[in-house]
Length: 516
Image (cartoon, rainbow, N blue to C red; front, side, top):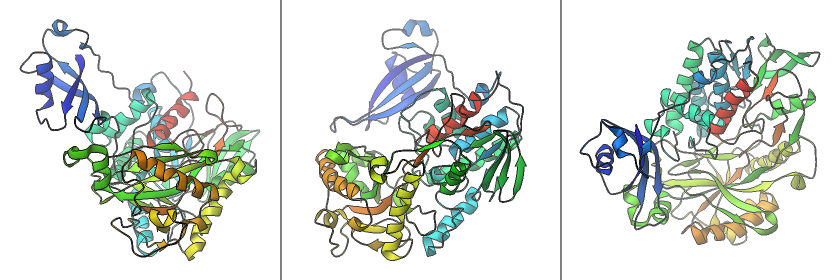
């Protein structure tokens, strides 16, 4: 095969194989495969798609030049990565988010018949529970936006882009496509699946793991770890004891009770810097016009990414931007409120939103206790709950927030999208002072680069406090903790930051401890 780049105007509807053939001076090629697709919007009067393609044609050697080279199709797979590896045990995987699912898939390919325990429900029942919460604010603390099959990423934009590009990441994306993710997931520069499609992908992953000998036990919570002479001997759950000599912890960033249990078991861990802030919402059309100008009607919903220095508060940055998405109530603990963002695959919602965050660390919670960050999260989530004595998030227009915090009259063109009811209020009363100062300094600075970002009608919703884990469970080069046979993995253990990197860490953690 041959590979080369094609730059195509967003208005050009010519089929890509025809354009590829034209690049070689041909009328047609035998095969054309998209390897990469990105959008170049640096110049709004000349926005283009940039493709990297691989084509098959006769006499390929004739077309080799400085722009055209040979290409060998090689798609990494998890199954291929396990070849030559061996593991003699029946391990337990704790958690069925991306990290747990891919750890279990790797273990299943190794023919270990893994047992996956998940404190929450399967994804269908979990969706039902979140709908109940959205409708009447009855929270199931074991099955919600944070806990259950698919993990927290199931209720998100489903982004698969990551700053890391290695064989683990490519294998993860390949498995997602095999399990029902859209074909373009394999080649988009910024792939996303969306909440609606992620649920089906997760179910298909589960079925695949089961077909290779895996077992799933839902509504089964890890409560203790039995050890003998410093080695794992069994997983203790609220449904009974499971003998095993390996436990793969993929517990997610919100398993506070599990962090506490591990600390009490003297598993070595440290507190970790994380971020806190709000969700900011704008009209999708405004963001699209700001990013794409006149081309916005022919392009998908626009995303953005921004970071600005705000003096002693550090850096204010956007995170987990959800084009055409909505804010969701992501509460998981009794008496606390937190929010997140999500999008469906179509990204066709009226609003777009992102997290606006400031880093917090030991200087803020003034303690070196490993769980001090957890308590800091909890303190402010409880402040939001106490604001209205309910699970309703606190919402305020940016105009009111910027003008001293007094809450005025009705909303403008941007209406809050959070599905549960909300309370209009002064965000100063439920955010750390550092975060309040950072938001007030930083939003106008972002507005200089992104038109209308600092519109008075933009809506802020509190509190976003679960951007990453507040702890890191220490592990060695084989991904094993201070207890032999215990492998802390993924985002909850402090080693990943998103769906793809968490899934990749699940693969890496299993292979690191396998023989061969």
